[in-house]
Image 1: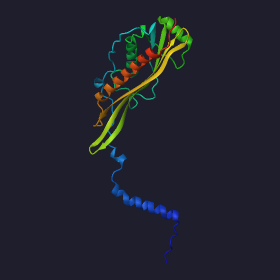
Image 2: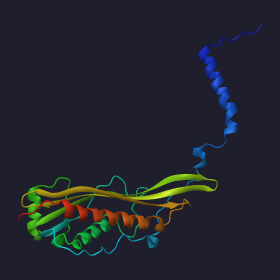
Image 3: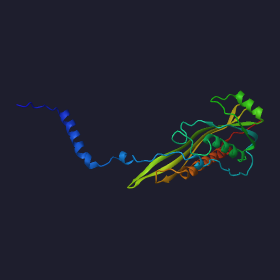
Image 4: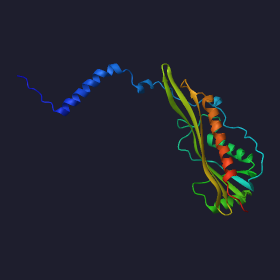
Length: 240
């Protein structure tokens, strides 16, 4: 006579759960994850098709904020991630260099200072008052501007699943932390973080240079506009 197996309530519940799952699986169709498996990878364009990050800043009219000469140190790249996929090869120029150039031209055209000078020196993580005073003296400037590039990245965000594919939101983020320092006293006249992002819709999944280049320039220009606006509005008084 065959032996009968004894099922505890816990074992019986587990068996019923497995059987129900097997019965329902054919009725559920493809999972949402499987539906997104056809997402196309983003590759950097070929060198000759890469857009430029250079632009001409708008000229500003108005009174000086500081009757002083400012030195702009080389922009420090403090980003955790490069533009996309571990590389900055989406633009004609190296991103930190191009953004540093734009920072200099923006400050030069801002009418915040009597004169603006570019100082080809990248500060380390620790910057002493002695170093600042020495750099200022060597370059004939009264104030020093130090900036860290904290974000310049592109994100692709899935929006809506359609019958023929997926809509994407292409986002470019820009973030900068800047400090305006009086090297004579070590006093920080202004320090603030600015961040901007611009986005656009893409329905093909294939990202072309025009999908991100305009957003990148707008985010960068808006961030620099914030820097200039905040220095003018909240920068402390400089007393030589």
